[in-house]
Length: 398
Ligand SMILES: [Zn+2]
Ligand SMILES: [Zn+2]
Ligand SMILES: [Zn+2]
Image 1: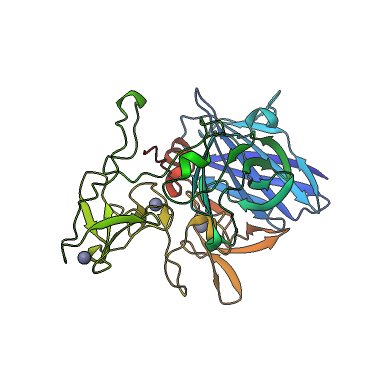
Image 2: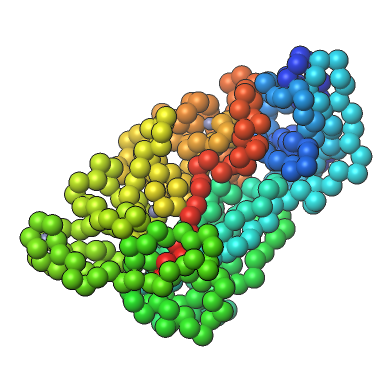
């Protein structure tokens, strides 16, 4: 396949992109780099019948590199790169020597929290292009599970709720692979870990390298210690704690802080206090164990875990909350940050913009009703990476 990209600055801040590809691709991804000391990256993937897309409200003080990548039945072709400064009267020019492989994202800081028949993985993704993330769980040579994730996902738990049956005392390894345009370009070294019942996690994992392991926090201390030397010794919850309702003892059981008398459940708020689960306005998160409080983000209806920052998404027509790794159709191509896709009528649409998407080779591409992208927030978005929907936190507790 061959693809040729053309760009035209049509007004201050507005760039019209058009492309010609042969044979006709199934989808076309526009690759955009904002140049500078710290380059930023975004891609938008459109259906192959779209051949023009105009991006408005770019900063006219920035220089962007753009390219188009066509895909069809396993074939991939990338156009040359164009350098564009969106200021009226400035013509785009070809950028020589730009190399896609120098702009691919990698995965780093993989951390695993072993728990009772459960593993939680946390990681970071460096700035760069990435459109696929795969987590592989192995027991020895045997692959137990491969999970395909959106690049925005930066943590995931694996247990029976996600149909991953883990056995306490068995050794597993976890690794992640980053891919772009169907090619794996980065793989992390495997992290060894062993699930174990509450209280036995450290002992069960004692033979593994510890640098990539973290343990669940059952303390009253704030959980995230930025400076390790300040890390206080773990204080297991005082066994003499009593329930505020029935004065019976309260103890950790299955990572839940429960009253033995009336069954009331509490969560530590990380500042030394306990909150009665029954009194929480939005309930608790589904990403952490022990569970954390769900809070509403200021200025939006979005609910997020107070600890991990992970958004808990309510989808029309479904009960409860979804995490981005559990969305049935993944994320849209029309918004930044990307928003959940939902089924509406016959089609799959963005829950925010209502733009239609189509499944092309297993991924959803945008079929734009108007080939115009409003990039009002693109610089904020590029500055923030794509992190808005997927902030993460890591417990380093005792
Ligand atoms: Zn009680
Ligand atoms: Zn959480
Ligand atoms: Zn959207």
